[in-house]
Image (cartoon, rainbow, N blue to C red; front, side):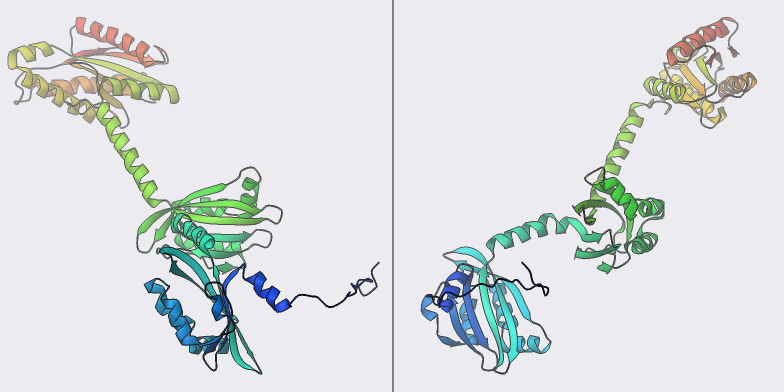
Length: 446
């Protein structure tokens, strides 16, 4: 039963005085948590030891606070000693008290039996009629320090920031931010949606801005997280020091019901650049594997691959020309192989000069070439190209450098009329090239 003022109708009735010493029990209970508890008189620079695990004989004794701090320094690693003296000195604590600070906390490392241990020291500052004083407590934090160091090394060091996003109220708080130089959004914001647009327009590279703004909208985030564990976005951010940087943003639910979301941003610039280098290396290796070293044209495999891709994914009509140089063996036998190689190089350059932009030229055999025309509009367009190829080879023959007459015979197959694959087309074009050669050479046959 509850009264109208919400006060319980039943109150416990004391059955007598407790038989224990509350003060002693309190010390015994807190002794499971604290290494030391003391009260500092900041006005007199004196400290009263209320509890000490390491030195129980000091309990109830009073010391000069500065000397007590100096005793602690003997057990601390060198870098922490001056910090303890400075930050926990009576004058500094009094200064904090006047600045309305209620407490001060700092972590230290000390050595016991040769092993490093971590402790946290904390002061609770108070001012009353009795003067200015502080309660000083020390407790072990080995596990907390280990966890913190793991988080710092493997999480914070790898992330630009962590943001706690309140999607329900369109606000956020950043509780970790890197000082690596890449611009950060404000640490607190009451309008996440407006801030993300402002930040994207100012720092995200233009090519990625619209995508970032779309993918970072709250409605989009909640939709994706309703179906997947993580919503990830990749984008480029302009760093005033490093220039272009690549970032990955990851959204995860912290509390799905309350729509509380964790957002982290990770720098993946090195990984991104390495992937680009690897892709470029692969492209160069592929190009080298598909290139004829003598002429610089596509080799046999490169020609087959490129034409097959065009036939598979392209639309419209195509023309494949199989070209055979006339009397090339005579050039090799009369002038030598170096002259034959020079003729092949000049032929390659001549073909590249007269084909349309986007058409393929490849060397598929000793003196055999293929020209592949995409998206042809008419047969006359193909015939005009074939005539240009014949004329180009003839012009090579009258050059003083080569000193012999040259010509070529061309067979032409059309797709899809004569076939839809490289094999069928080249078989038809090869047969027609042989027909052109048998008809007197220096001509094309369709």
